[in-house]
Structures are given as structure tokens and as C-alpha cells.
Image 1: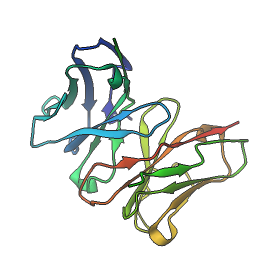
Image 2: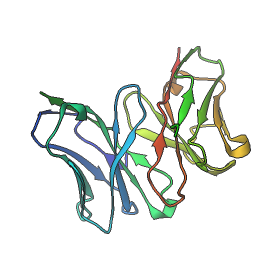
Image 3: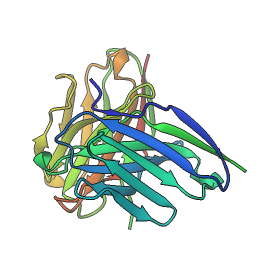
Image 4: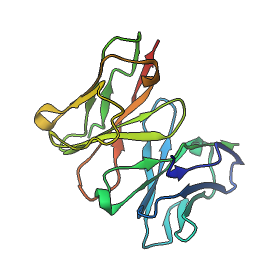
Length: 114
Length: 114
């Protein structure tokens, strides 16, 4: 029973355009959310996070939006670059577990073409 | 600063054999985690060490899996006897701050059970 869902297995975007990756969660106890980026043959790398007390967090070209009522978050990449091509994982956790146990989605493969 | 390292990078074994995976966390990180990704699905939590103690092993699939972290430094994950469904990529992660959700991942060990 998946608690974190990424319903789009892949996304193709042209360089310079916006990439929007979506994530839904079902567990109301989740109160902290992270996005990880993964290149082939490498481990996931932390990208950006957001606490449930916020609805937006921005870091350079990356912005994460959180809609708690809809249990939905999204990652916006603007402008997209070919080097952004990777698999993006959404992850959730909660203070109840001391933020120690990450629950991941299945990932979305982003391809940014020149 | 060296990142999380894992050995071996790949392992191919036959059903019924034993395999031991090793993880060296970032120096000084007390928290060490094991995760597994099977067949392109989500990355699933297996267990969490704080120093040499198992804090949470709720994700361990069954008693064929044994994780240890003697001395609170590196960790090993032994699968004995291996079954076909154990195939996947095993990731190790570490963190220092007990209340920081960001975890640093190693490159993973790809295990194939034939």
C-alpha cells in the first residue's frame, strides 16, 4: 500500500521550459517532504525540502509547493536544463519517527532535450 | 569529505547462496540507514541504526536479512539464503543531525539472484 505516489513515470521537456513533477501522499502524519534526484549508477541526492508549516520553498531554479489539504506537492524547475535529466523521487517523513524514516515514491524520469 | 561508500557495486549470486553487503557512512555520522529498490519500484526503508543500536528495523522483509553495525562505524547487510525476490538495488544512507530529515545516500549495491 503506497503512501507516496508519483503517478507520472516519465516527463519530457524542452530546454528552457518549466518542468513540473507531481507527488501525492496519503498519510496525514507526514509533515516533512523532500525531493531527491538520481542519476544512473548513483545514489539519490537531496535536492530540496519543505515543512508542512510552509506552502512554498525556493532554491535557485527549484521550487517546491505543498498543498496540505489536497495532500499534494510539486517540484518546479525553471528553466530546465539538459543536466536536469534524471529520476526524481519524492519522499515524506514525520516528526513521529523523528524524521528518520523516509517513505519514497516510485520516481519520475525527467528528460530535458536541447 | 568522503561520501557514503558501498561495496560491492554489483553482486550476482545463485538462489540459496549468501551475500554480504557493506556500507561505510560519512565519518562522524551516527545514523545509518538501509533502503532497497526492487524492479524500478519505490525505494523502501529497511532499517535504521543509531551508532551500533538498531533504532527501527520495521522494514526488514524477513529473518533471512541480518544487519549489523559493530562499533558504530560501518554496517553490513547479510542475506542468507538469498531468494529470487531479493534482487534489487540496496542503498545505504547516513546522517548526523538526529532531527534533520536529509540523508546522504551511497551509490548502492545491485544484487541479482539467479
